[in-house]
Image 1: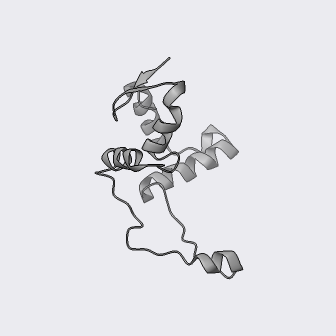
Image 2: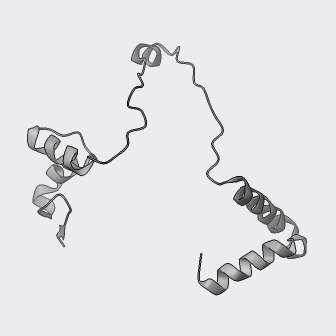
Image 3: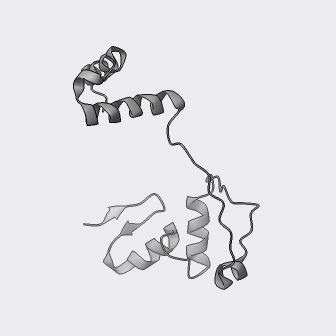
Length: 112
């Protein structure tokens, strides 16, 4: 079933490659697709804007990767997660009361 897309027009089997190229899933193949891509991502904040990639080092195998540990959660959520992991291993009796209360409150409010 064809769907209306924010870039305009219907997405269907006959224009799927055009839509994929215009939305960034494939590379834009012409000026029209490039213009639609730029229109769709006009407000997107590119994080790598002033960065460069040394392609030769990738090809030659001399690229040095720097890894950073990135936390997806704030420290308080991370603490809660660690306690829940511990509870999953040791059973419910090891969950602190404040964590159980948070879980019950979230369950009552319908949050998941």
